[in-house]
Image (cartoon, helix red, strand yellow):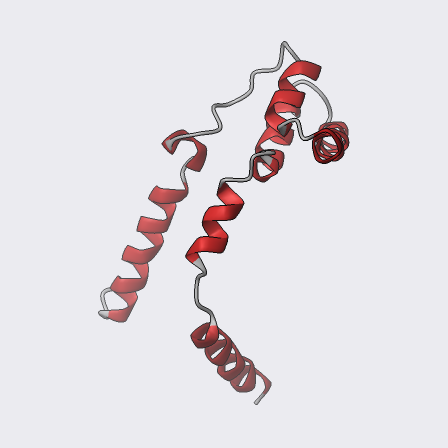
Length: 115
């Protein structure tokens, strides 16, 4: 019964969710680049322990908010030798598009009874 109720609640919740395109676009267009914090912490983690990289990006994100300087610029300035990835264009999505397409194909196959 609990599983059934959970499934019912999930279906109800999923049907009530609608994307807010303008809000999503605003987050992506953030002039401080805070949306890139995780990507930048992974990049720094190549040269230092992950907890230190996360703490450094958190510190620099606070500085970005205080000064209005974009986070990617602060990270690049504080760590000039770090191999930072490009933060614009299709390369920022990594393997997400391929994984999403594979998931959708697998879901369709299950729905069609092919799996």
